[in-house]
Length: 322
Image 1 (cartoon, rainbow, N blue to C red):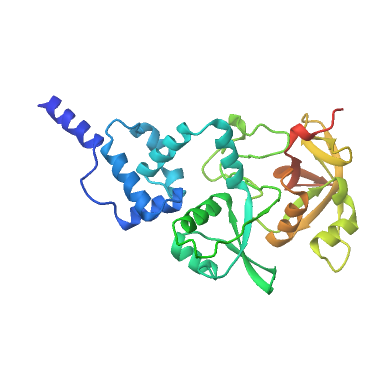
Image 2: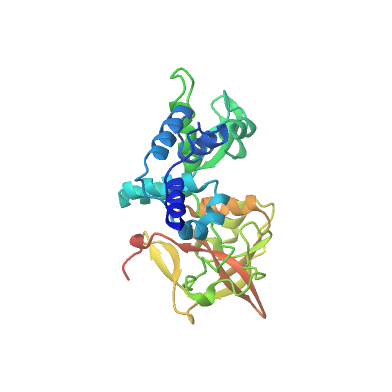
């Protein structure tokens, strides 16, 4: 009897109920993969009918469940994502991941006249930026690479007479500060156990959206006029002499300074500056471009030490040969 029960359980796990996907399920597949409703319906039906398709074990799903549900997946859609990854060559997968981290802007108008209509139709959030278009002042939406693909897929399923948006890629220094480890930190391998969360109440600083936040400047950002112009300040900025440890300066393009990881006792001198808002930070990240990335560091100013951020060079293949 126990064996029969076990076989029944296995059969239940191998098949899905014979029912149409709900609208919520179709919407989830559309948001995650850019499928139209008919495409999602067909793929879901084929997936559920294929009892031999690769499936996640309970152990694996329980390990990633909380993280993936926060990203919008359920178990079925994440299994599909894993299947897609397994079929994608590494170089194409890397290209997609790079695109997802990039930012794009497009002019709002037509079907998507504001970010509210974008949210209602595709479940995509975007930041609005005021700018100047061909016909004067205009609003532009800023989205990431995954949202760009979803929008393009949605338009591809519509009538060809509907005007498509034109996406412009924006190059800025990526910023992705972990909440559960010190990653990324200058001069530290944050994957090591000693750099992970020591207890559930520990807070790694600075946080992703923490403002004001101190930045360490080196290279051209040590020039008061450069910072004043970048941030559109009415007066020269209050740059404070400072230093950081764990990094070394190299060059790229035979003229630009590049901060890279170094020995723990390696010191770099520069200036510290308090960035007041995400808008100011955005100007700095845009200036530095994706050749750099925002990382945590410890900034020393005279007798004071604080947790702050700096720009670490990210394109090691472009470094000049010493």
